[in-house]
Image 1 (cartoon, rainbow, N blue to C red):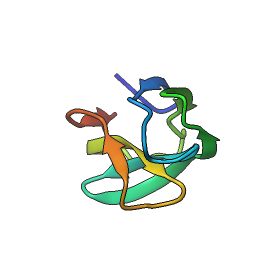
Image 2 (image 1 turned 180 degrees about the vertical axis):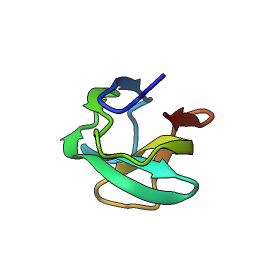
Image 3 (image 1 turned 45 degrees about the vertical axis):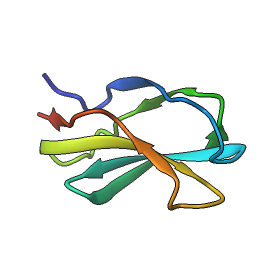
Length: 82
């Protein structure tokens, strides 16, 4: 299954990480792409995996606080882009 162009309907528990968050695509502990630079921290957002994302395993989605990059949540488990 190809995940490029895939729409991720992510949910997270909004809380004390600030009013705005940044949503990123990570691969093996390295940021691969910024999916959404800024969005309201309401616990829900749809984003699209870029068509030019490298194929492979070890991907995750990370939701970061815009105020404090040390505050974040990561998807459970990893996924592959094929």
